[in-house]
Image (tube, rainbow, N blue to C red; front, side, top):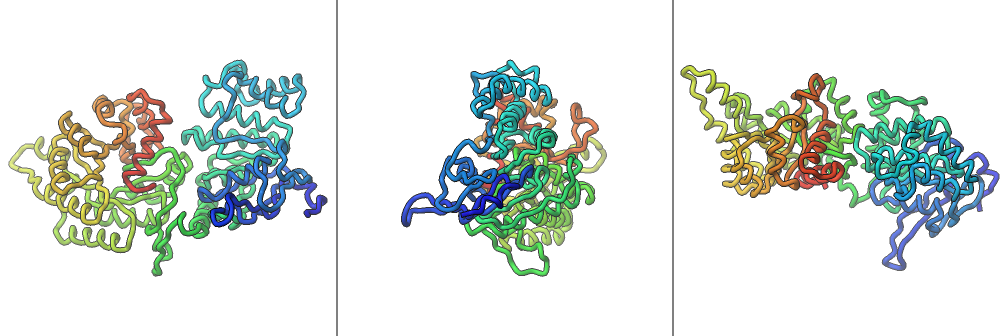
Length: 554
């Protein structure tokens, strides 16, 4: 039994919590003896692999489940198996649709024992504080997802219990709204300083919000390590680019990789002079986020900008990027970036067609290098490869006696296609207008099914042909204003679409003057939703699932 005197300054204490489901040989241990604590006014986050028992732990703390072994102490009292000692905010807002915004908060307070008159006054005061007073008499369905989560958080914040449990509260929000909500939550929490336990899959979110981070192992979960977060409060968005932030994030990510057991992350780390070697051999855990930039030239950004670009992208909700290459040197750079961002940056190696064909020796070196990456068991795609529509068009428009010979490009595309089949890799194509038909001829001749046409443009006949073959097409943010791309979206099957930025190339109209960054791929998904007349969240999920499936990132 725990001495109660030890808990007066501690809001939560879990003592050796074990949880098994089932009996006998069919039993499964989910929690392997967890002991954690939260001090008064402390904000603590838990991160861990999917299936590590985080939700089960919340149910035990909240009294919905009784542990197989161990005790829960809240505010100095043993509360194991008892309800009513915590306030809770789930991933979805769970607002009552028949109650107004104010009614949802007031009802929660009165159920918790707060006098009705006081509940009404506190609700009015706090709705004004968070800028939602004009929605007090509105019903939840008229609010955006972010606004619903603000109401849900306020409902938990105003409850009389000292301990708040936040279960992935922003997981369903888009990237920008999620980041705004994190900043908003911090500003509101600073006014109250309740004890908070947050479960999140986002290391960045945990670092931004927390005083301390607890890292769990794979099930049966134990504490791998605890990290004190060193950043002063109040915190601002500039923290995302702080080198200390990135270093601590990388330490936690590395711990999750090495601490996860067989079945969650299958590693094939090999001995090498390069300490980073082997990270591309992993079957990396699925990264959380709301979109994948399916085509970006990371290596063409200035070297000093790349880390900041990627860190911002992941902070904005980008789950991963597909980093395509221009030639051998570009491929080497992208591989190095992918090694540093394992599970986040997925490389594609090839030769971009809008440039002169190099000597055979140089091409042979590229093909040999790609085969070495395959023999080492690394994950990659073939790309960017294709045909030189714009180079050929410029040469033809220039006139004169110069005759553009596209045969070397057709031969090279045929060679890359054969390589993709040989190594069983996806292939990323630059082939637009009449070149798309020529590319389809080559793909069909080799029996290729996993083909991705980026920034595609073509006539109705080739569009039908590509769709019939199951080829993927990625849409860029200029779908917002380009009628040709909008028509493509109308005609092409949703299940064969992805989104991309083709960065660093800039866009016009609403994006004029803005540097291209991976999170803009999410904008393309929103425009697709509008054209297809489908819910934006649904389309974002479909684009994400399509890209994961095509590139084998499941």
